[in-house]
Structure formats: structure tokens, C-alpha cells
Image (cartoon, rainbow, N blue to C red; front, side, top):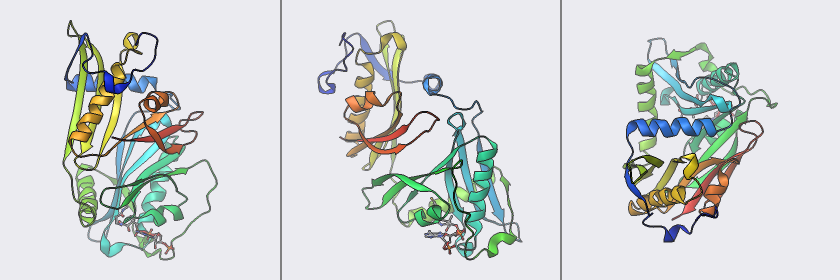
Length: 302
Ligand SMILES: CC(C)(COP(=O)(O)OP(=O)(O)OC[C@H]1O[C@@H](n2cnc3c(N)ncnc32)[C@H](O)[C@@H]1OP(=O)(O)O)[C@@H](O)C(=O)NCCC(=O)NCCS
């Protein structure tokens, strides 16, 4: 372990000199901050979530979206939820909303908008707007989930929906209550296709014999579906001793114990080798995000 090699993960339990304990909330925040410092920064900007809504003549919300700009420093806007009321679909309202998201993204110096959709949802809708698929994942329920991206600094042909009669409505900024209506709309729509599965969190740390924080992992698992590793962090002087591998393996064990056969994570070209050495394979690649780097979506069969 001293020569800088990552040990065989099957032989590392228990790890001498350390105890595994639950992460506190403060430590989870600390890990997030530390990781953010490692990630290459393209622009300096505050994290922010915003809501867009469209109301009808009676002031009812008939569509909207929730976008997370937590990756502004990557010049990346993430469109989390987009929904149009069933009675108003295919009237150009979804298109109005997505155009506004892109306008705001450009305004905030984002070069890309990314989003996820599923095979029963709206992939062709996004493709009409110039989005391309960069990751696919077949889910246990048979549906495929896709990640899509649009590079805002690349030419895409203008697109106007064949039925644009919803253009008489306006897109405006919404608040938390509006977000709830939009979220309920999408949840109701999705539950006809997907069963909600229980999510189990895994927030663990390694502490040395004096109780000092050495390393942490934040992961979760959708029971019977797949696990996701949000973050693994090892304090700098303690790297290359197998602590990260140990925590990753523990997260994989939790996912396996909860009926998952797959674990997923995201990485960048600055840290992807750690995951590759631990048996993770590429399932999608986002080129030049952040600028001058590539980032990846990875999986491992567990
Ligand atoms: C997907 C959704 C947001 C699109 O909004 P919308 O207002 O209906 O879309 P628009 O009228 O702007 O459609 C633009 C074009 O995309 C097409 N389109 C819209 N939704 C589509 C879908 N689900 N599948 C295939 N094509 C779709 C339209 O037919 C139109 O194409 P055309 O110009 O060739 O006729 C809306 O249909 C919706 O809320 N669906 C249910 C929830 C959902 O799937 N949300 C997306 C989650 S990722």
C-alpha cells in the first residue's frame, strides 16, 4: 500500500488504524467544499436553483421547470424537471420554457445545458431543440434513461414547433410553491411508468485512532435498482493508502445488500483513474466540460 498502488479492494477489510463511523452533516458539507476546490473552475459563480412557470388565463400553473445551476463554475446548467399539463401539451409551451432556460444559461455564462430523460418521456422533444444523448442506461423496469447535452456555443438550427399556439402564454420566474406544483405534475406523470423505490443513504467516514476525520464517502442506493456514489474524499496527506478504495467498496457493499446490481458515479479526467482502477467502466462522456477537460459517467456491475 505504501508504493502508491490502490490495493485489491477484496482484501482490504478491516483497514488497520481506522474506524468507520457516520458522517455528520457538517462533515458532508466539508467534503462537498473540498471536492469543489479540486474541480477545475471555468467561471466563478454562486450556486443557484430557479423555477420557471407558465400560467393560463385563470392563473393556474400549466407548465414549468426547475433548473439547478449548482454547476455554474463548470459553465453547466442542469435542467432538473420540465413539465407541461396534459391538457396543454404539444402547443409549444415546453419549447418556450426550454428556450428561456437556455437564455438564462447563456446569461450566466453557461456553455452547456444538460438534463436527463427516459424512454417513456421526451427524448425526441429535446432532440428537436438540438440536444444529443451522451449516456444511456437500461433500468431494471425495462425503461432506458438518457443524459442529454446541448452546447450553447455551437450552431443549432432554429426550431419552431408545428403547433405554437401556446405562445400566447408567458414564461415567468416562479417560487418554491410553484416548484411544488411542477414537481407534483412530473411525479404524477412518472408514477404511471415507474414504481417509486426506497432510497437508502450511505454517509460514512474513516477516523484515525484519535478520532480525527481521515476520509469520507457520500452515496445512496435506490433499492433493487442502482447505487450512486456522490463523493469520495480522502485528506491529502492520507491519499494513496487505500482509504478511498475502502470507502468505495463499502458503498458498493451497501448497494449490493439493498438489491442493486449496478453502482454509478460521475468523474472528471482529473480523477477518473481512481474509479477505473476500482473496476468502473465508462458509460458516457461529456467533452470539453469544464473547458479543457472531459467528464464521464461511469458504472460498475456489483
Ligand atoms: C415533454 C414536454 C415537457 C414537452 O412540452 P410540450 O409543450 O408538449 O412540447 P412542444 O409543444 O413545445 O413540442 C415541441 C415538439 O416536440 C414534440 N414533442 C413534445 N413532447 C414529446 C414527446 N414526449 N415525445 C415526442 N415528441 C414530443 C412535439 O410534437 C413538437 O414537435 P413538432 O414541432 O414536430 O410537432 C411535455 O410534453 C410534458 O410535460 N410531458 C410529460 C412530462 C415529461 O415527459 N417531461 C420531460 C421530462 S424529462
